[in-house]
Length: 518
Image (cartoon, rainbow, N blue to C red; front, side):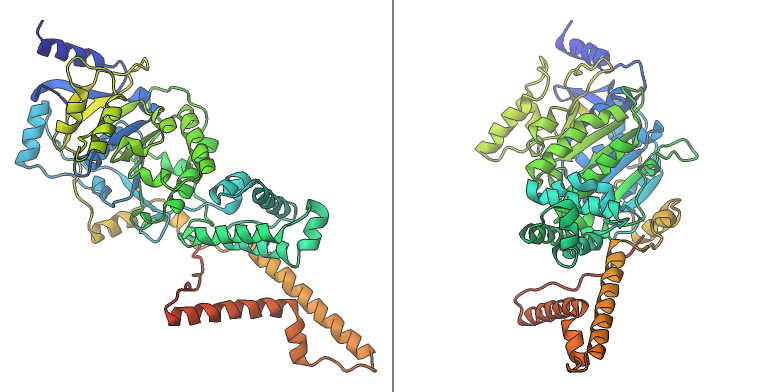
C-alpha cells in the first residue's frame, strides 16, 4: 500500500461517523485534491468548542459561513458575533461562477446556492432586535468583576444590591446604580450605615468612576429593559432550518470592555437558563465569536477567570463555542486547551518571532506521518485549512489539509434595503424594541429626596412663623440651603464646566443621552 492509499484510508476511517455530520471540504495530499475524500464535522462533539484561525485574507469568514450553514441545515440554531459586518450575506443565496464550480468539482460535490433564516440583533444603535440586561440580573459578584473592583469596593456593591432588594428599589440601568451610589454617600449614608455597616466615600467615588468608564463605551445602551430571553436564540424556521442570529457589532471594535461585559452576561444567562444536556447527539446552540482577541485583550484577571470557567462548564448545556481569530496565541492557554475542533488557515512567517510562534502552534496538532505541520501551516492557499476534530469517541481525528467548500449563501454583505427588509420580517423585534421606562431606583430615590426637601422647607417656614423675634429667611436663602437645590447647583456647575472645557478645546464630554428603552 503506497502513501496516498494509506492516507485516503486514514481520512475515510477518521472522518466517518455514526451520527450526523457537516461536510467541510475535501482532503489534499501532497498538493493533490482528492475528490470524494471528505472531511466532516460530527454534530455530536460540536459542544466541545473549537478554533478557526489564520492570517487576514485566508478565508476564516467563509469557514464561519460554511459551518453555520451546515448547522442551520441540520436544524441547529446558531449565534454569530459579527465584528466586521460581513456575515449578513447568509440571508441571501450565493451566485455560482467558474471558480466556485471548479472548487466544488475538486471536492466532488455539486454547488447548490441557498439562503438561510437570519435574525439581526444589536447591543448598540445598529439595526436589529435589541439585546439588553438589567443591572440586577448581573448580581453583585459579576457586576463587581466587570468593574474590576477590589474586595472592599465589591463589598459596597453587595450592600447596594442588598439595600435595593430590601427596599424594593429595582436596579435596571446604570443611572439607577449611580443614583444609589450618590444616595449612600450623602443623604442616605447614616440610614444605610446603621443597618449595613460603614461606608467609605473614597470607595464609592472609585466605583462611580468605574461606572462612568463603562458608560463611555456606551454600556448604557445595553443595561436596561426589556431583558433579552436566551430561549429566543433556539428558534427553528418553518422549513426546519435553525435560525442564524447575527449580533451586529461593527461599532464596538474600539470598545472591548463593552464587548466582554456583554458576552460574559450572555454566557452566564445561557448557562443559568438552559437545562443540563450532557453529550447529546446534536448541539442545542452553537456560538461563533469573530475577532475573539477583543474578548480577552483587556479583560481583568477576575473577568478572564469567570469567562474561562463558563466556557469549561457550558458544554454540559449542549452549547458549543467557536473562537475565530488571526493567531491561536490570541486565546489564553486555559481556554485553548478546551477547544476540540481546530480549523487552521495559513499563517504568515515574516519575522523570526513569527517562525517561533508557528513552531509552537504546530505542536497543538496531532502528529502526522503525511505532513510536515510547520511547512503546511505556511504553504496553504486561500480557502484551504489544516483540520482536526474530535471523533464521537472524543479522540482527535487525523490532521488533514482541506480544500473548503464554497458557502452556499452570498459571500458579501447585504445592502441597506435588504437589511431593512430583513428587519421588517423579524418576529421578535417588536418584543425587544418596545420603549419601556418603568419606575426604578432612580425615580424612587429622586421622589424620596424631593419629598424630604419639601418637608424640611415646610418645617423651617413653620419655625420662622412661630418665632416672632427672628427674621424669616428669604426665598433665596431657603433655596440656597435646601439639599435638592445644592445638588442641582452642583449639576449645573458640572455642565457649565464641561461646556467651557469643550469651547477651549481641552476636553469634556457631551451630555449623557437619555437611554432609549427597547
